[in-house]
Length: 77
Image 1 (tube, rainbow, N blue to C red):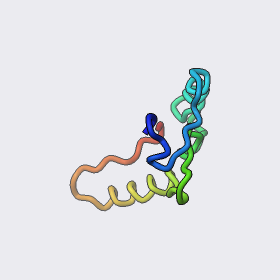
Image 2: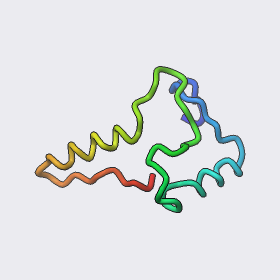
Image 3: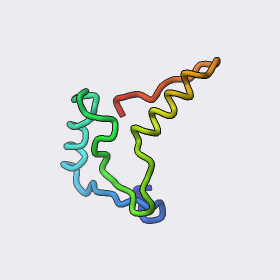
Image 4: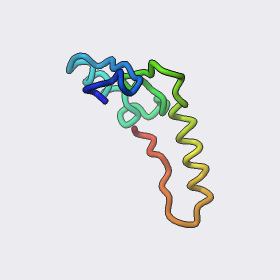
């Protein structure tokens, strides 16, 4: 995806090491108060993407109904 982002309908915003460093400083691992949908360094250019927090909620709800082991989405993405 980083080699041909337009092919996947995304626009990458990381251009320098400092961009990546700032991203790493602002993840829920270091700042648990941040939402799951915090800045990820890219955005979609095609149709609006489904929100990550909504996808995580749907997955967690599905997991809760499974009899087999199903792990919830980690909150430290």
